[in-house]
Amino acid sequence: MIFALIAAAILVGLLMPVQAGLNAELTRFLKHPFLGAFISLTTGSIALLLLMLVQGFPLQEVKRIGQVPPVLFLGGIFGALFVGSSIFFIPRMGATSMIAALITGQLLMSVIMDHYGLLGLSTYPATLTRIAGVILLFVGVLLVVKKSS
Image (spheres, rainbow, N blue to C red):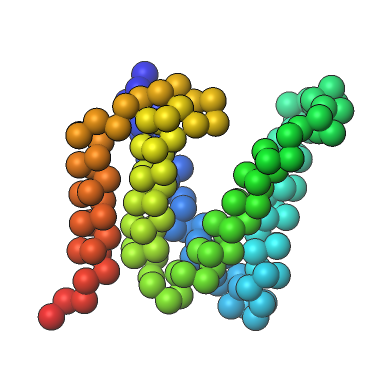
């Protein structure tokens, strides 16, 4: 089961640089970074709305939005930050360097979150093996961005 989940996550991960490239191209076409990010996020929101309509609109859950702790809305802001920053980074760094750096940051924060059980996650200790994996990703970023001589 875990290997199927890993394969699915890798397949979704394959789309991250494609998404960033499409968003950067959209921004270049529109000649405005915030408009490009807005269109990208709006398109994604429409896709989610259509999916909810197909599955049955969750009216009872929508009624609970007013009870959501405000801090939980940061996820949407962070999503916008990801889209906006990838639009900024990809033309300046290239897809490989940008994705390598983003994934390294994601893994570093994931190890910290797992170790402390942040945001209600189960705890998974930051073992030497996990720390070595993060260090190797940092080394990987350096190798990816290193100019060939």
